[in-house]
Image (tube, rainbow, N blue to C red; front, top):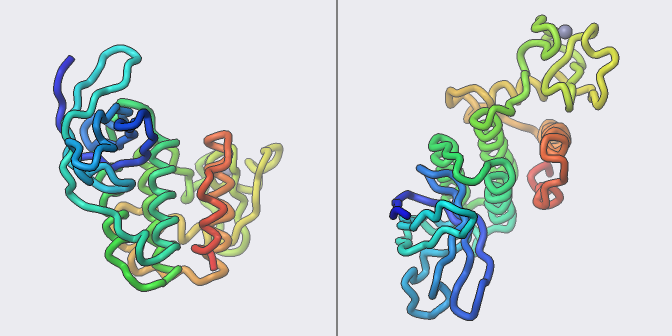
Length: 255
Ligand SMILES: [Zn+2]
């Protein structure tokens, strides 16, 4: 048993006993961990108010090598997620970030760049006070693209996922939900779960998946936001084999 330190985002808190909670944390250095926080529910407990949903904190924990829960020994608050008190769409977007990290990552599998992207996304959701659905939709789409890329699930938006061939820049384009990307006319035949999407949607995906910051200049009008959500929700549902709980609340982002 060794004592480890890391920056962490609180993904989930479940009451364990009168005084303790079980915390699921996405850490920068160790990936997702589940740890018992003894005394966390006591008013003047050892973690004070650091264990708060979507907060970032510096933690110290004892890693148990077997199936046992890790043990959280320290948590110091670095950033609280305050969107809850301001704006419902920002709150839902924050919950969605937590759900993606919870469901897309494995225990003990670190992805420091994904951690940094998540932390930045939550900070941006918190800082933006206005109720601009477009900005929230853009912030979330950017995070989804980074998450898919970091975890090796980013669909191909440039070339046909079947043959690597170029695709037309205009008109409707076939997107294979199971194939994992765009498909040319030939490769489309015989594929299951293929949807026809506008070239504008593919262009937007490409811009938001690009490592540069050019996505910040990409506007998403209402029609595009709705179409993007439809394609992406379907893709993630197929990938995970279940519907994400927060998808139905993301409708506000498509409006
Ligand atoms: Zn092809």
